[in-house]
Image 1 (cartoon, rainbow, N blue to C red):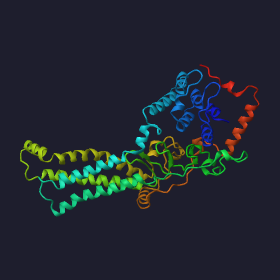
Image 2: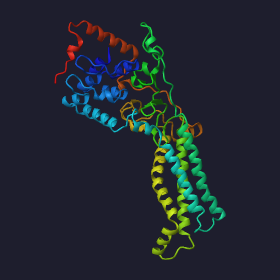
Image 3: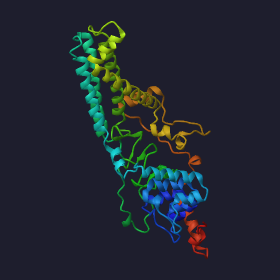
Image 4: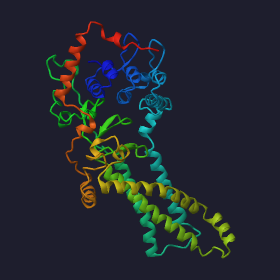
Length: 413
């Protein structure tokens, strides 16, 4: 079976396997149709999703002999859901969100230096306009300790920010099998065939780019182009993925920066309000503050704006850590069958209780995964042996027909 037939039949698992084995995803048949064309014609959304995720912009723009793209074919056939999906994928590429274009490369890098420099600028502004301002009285010993602790917290946060940005988030080693040198009688997936995930029929764990059977909680990051263990999200501000090996640094960075913003914001307000030179009239005080404390007020506004965004992210991360669940899993809770119980309701098999989840994360730096296989009934997976038997039966059936296979699939426009 090739990709074209698998796409026509809607066998997404077969497509994953064939792409895993380096099958050509863009080959056109005598009708000019690629596998993506046939998946669109047959309204196979899952097959379209697999092909688009493994493909490039050019795969969406290829036209058949009638001059129609997969998106146009889906629209002509009134396959609304598929047409919308393909249209959205095309627009994302056109706007520059693919990993092979300039915007994708920019988002892959390089917002971390901007955040780093902005944080340093705010820290310097705080020191000069609040702690060492010429129009304000000298700090007392106790209040000075509190005021300078904000600088210490922000500096420690920047150290963790640097570590999080530079650290391996949990990249999974890519498979470098030389498929061209495999013997004809060598079994498919010789090394991976005994993998519990494949034996359970969880073909969605095949990564067609990295050529690996990834762990259940791992995900392929389209920006980094690598599979990441316990993938949480890709953070453009950190310029790195957040995963199993750097989530501890990311979370503590957030906690330290939120604490620093609380301290520095409170100190700034106190210093401005206790200025002994300020007049008693409110309007005159406003005028005085605008003249003598404009830098401190500017810092306070920026601190105020940043605080709510960072504090919200910190609260979300803390909640997820207490439940041992990732941002990616929360966003795809209806797609991942291992997060659903027998009745189809949400059930997190990795949740060991708030106390153990938090202590494991804080002291180990990560949470251990419980070995859980996806429910075959929900994932509609099939095992390796069953898939090979199905392929053999389908090939035998096709050979028994007198007509050539492609003539059965002619488009009717």
